[in-house]
Image 1 (tube, chains in turn red, green):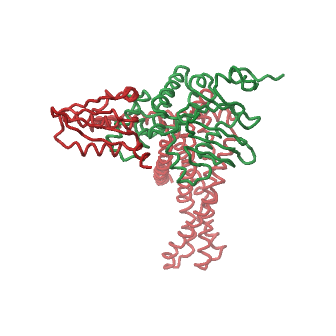
Image 2 (image 1 turned 90 degrees about the vertical axis):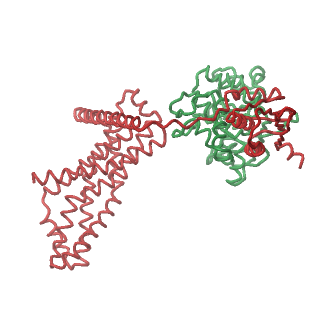
Image 3 (image 1 turned 180 degrees about the vertical axis):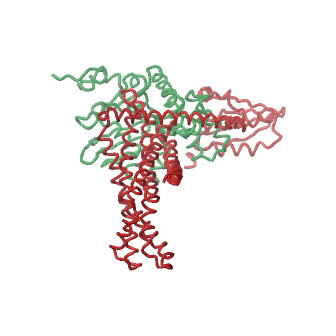
Length: 381
Length: 253
């Protein structure tokens, strides 16, 4: 047992020569198992001041690999820092060969790898600006290409890939219905409850119906639906296209003569623009139902009165306005999702980033577009 | 022959569901040799590799890697055994978000107590070993296919494993680059004494590097030939082995 332990270990000692030169004798295996210990050990023996020259005697080394060579390189760089020299002697043929392959002679200067000099502020600023400009360039060309593809789709409806559109419609619309319904129902419930606390003071319970229906149909319905769709589908678009991009599938489409925008983005955009307004309608209905539950069970309204008040409040224009908003939001979500997907370069981490960025930028754009709609309504309405 | 056995496979059966891919195959790999697993498409080469690496547990039979049974050990023990093993995947499987140097440094930083500076020196040596000096700070997407393979090899060898697995090392490389990779494999085998197991169907590299081969075939779901590749090419009686080594189409008569 002790014998095999001996074979596995690496020992070292320092002897002083007559002329003040020191020799380090190493014996045993110099490999991955012993390297870390040996480096620490030798460094603790060789306390400063270091000798002007150190010779390493490798005669009794039974095995040396690159971890073993690391011990020598560490010593060499330690000595180089003190302007001293390191010599090897009695290395056998095999050890010499390994040191040659590892290019031992070129090593030992303090390693400067993996630490790129960080550029100064102006260089970084310049790089950021050019990066943004390139980004902008890409965004404009993407918008142009989407517009052209949509025009092409209008002129040649047969070129549309109907199966793709239908399957996207299912994913964006049908699959989202339960969660959109649930969230909207609860939202209607909360709104009716909160407003009833205030309106009850004036005996204006019936106006809870107006408040819930109008705010849902005009504002919250489209926005809530759009945010849910951005989280569910916008991210999925970015991830799908991004993954296709890094696995060269987008290039494959291109070389097969398909326009990637027309093939990948247009079906998703069309499917979203068709389904999100419908989803919004469901969202409105579920919210009104939520309000109705509060109205009937807490405010002593009859279901009839509640629905009559709701219908009295809403005009066709309100519903249409909500539809229009939802369609615009859908365009933004699907467009941004696809754009972020196409922007992916490199590896898996980029896909994750694109997904995050797709959701964040589409939510921002949804809110921005909603503000624009509010201004338009204020001055035109 | 008193050479030490590093890998021992005994009556290995591998299956997916009801499909039996490998039916009771047995072979040994000795220390320091370059061993090739051959076979046409669908013969179970990749399945065998997955079993040897513990990525897929055998339906029955035993696999010993350096004396340890990996067919029945738990996850932790498997991880311990896999430290003795390095793998070069077909697509190199470098992590795209890290530079070449960071890819190689990852296992070293994780599993040794070396200082950051020592690791930098060591990574430099590893890259010298595969002739990639100067590409430390490149991302995998910025280097060519052959370089990726070599960087993958440097990472597979980061901890100087006893056994190196190669999955189709020359797939997708030009003849010159793949010949260089073959050279590198032989070189590393001789200088470091690493046992190498190559899964391939590239004839040229088989003859260039492999000292012993086994050939799998889907008809028997097992080994149909083993031995020196040159001997098999010239002497084998098995029609499929002949076709394979002499690059002939299967006769349909």
